[in-house]
Image (cartoon, rainbow, N blue to C red; front, side, top):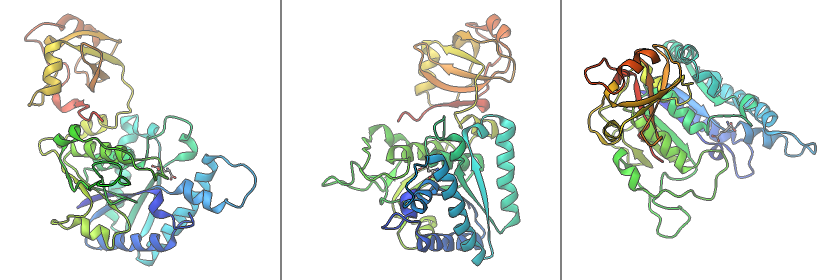
Length: 358
Ligand code: GLU
């Protein structure tokens, strides 16, 4: 299997908020065992800011989060590396930003780096957001989102999000009567009223975890959200009969080709906008079948886009529906708009709809 494992800050820290070397060794051992069984693994690890803070807690001079994260990242990767080496593995540090996902060229470079590391057989890519260049700016909302995008990018079979709670609860887990949701299917999420718990050290909360899982689900990837301190959590989760934590099932009908996966990153720059008419809006939102965008359903456009440019798709009442790649330029669309029997404007293979509404 190809598995992306995400570790949250809180489980990497001990009771005194220091980096827990015991936990790092334990989880690395589990990862090593999976690697030995032949699985491809990417580890997305938070904890840089937390580790930096722990190191500098006695310092009196003020220090910003960006520097904290760079000090902490060095510490974190040092310990990962030590633990990995004990098992004959190499830790390959990859620090990514949103910007790196913007151009298709860089997106493919990142993908190739992962593929190369898998081919080698003894390398574990360890990813974190490159906080020193992104904190204060438009960063990933959290590492849950980053992990989900990587899972989509490398066509993972599973995304495992390890956290400090048992999984996703039907209400704040601190509340009396809260119960763990062991299974969430993509069609269920609109009826769920997920509340955030109180104890959040990292950036991602329960909502972002569910959102990340639902995005992965659209690409046929199953997600497990579970407590990182459960014994042998990883082998338990990959067992086919696992009942640990919350399992968010994969949508079966969409797997998505390369361009679609990149579009799901949700961060590329669009050069034009099209507005769908009432009928096409309805079909895109609630239709059963995956559609291509025909000019007959488009009532307006903006931008001077060319063939191959990225287009933002909005409904007649200006809600963002998704994005796709233009099959022809703005001038041609102007001629075809509103007319029947004209060539497809965005092919469904190059169309990504925002179905997640959290
Ligand atoms: N990149 C941050 C860190 O390493 C964590 C972000 C998050 O909590 O998701 O501290």
